[in-house]
Image 1 (cartoon, rainbow, N blue to C red):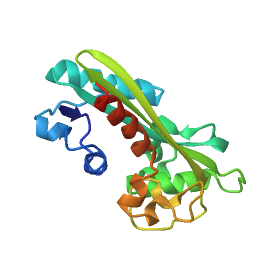
Image 2 (cartoon, helix red, strand yellow):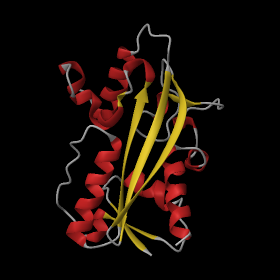
Image 3 (cartoon, one colour):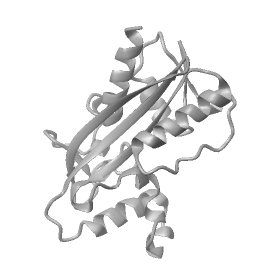
Length: 198
């Protein structure tokens, strides 16, 4: 089965390709030849994933799936959430001048300064459009936000996220280690289990 994954993020593509069985061929947007911009202007991860998946399906007429992921910090009313990838581009000009990933991390750490509740979760929602029908899958991993970065692997907020039950941040884990517990792994596992049941 061929499925278009509605992303141009090479890290996401690599992660997902490592998770799915050989029966499923994952095609990136670039490989599909799709070049249009896809809007992500909703207030929830579920709505963003749905919007992206239907847009691809209607334009390519191919089975596809889209995901949206976010870091939800309990003490900050579950922000940055749907704005995780562009958190530093909202509000304070100080963070807009930085590299976006660096700005995201610095802004989050600043907003958590002097806050003792560091509980957070990474959440992924996948919308699969299969022959015109939609199915959604969710993966969640709980943990805490550290006060400083640890590790060089991963991407995004990985250096400051310590998952429950582990002594390593996501950025200190190899891709193989992270893939066994990550939010994306959990959501993709549900997706794959569903596809294998068809």
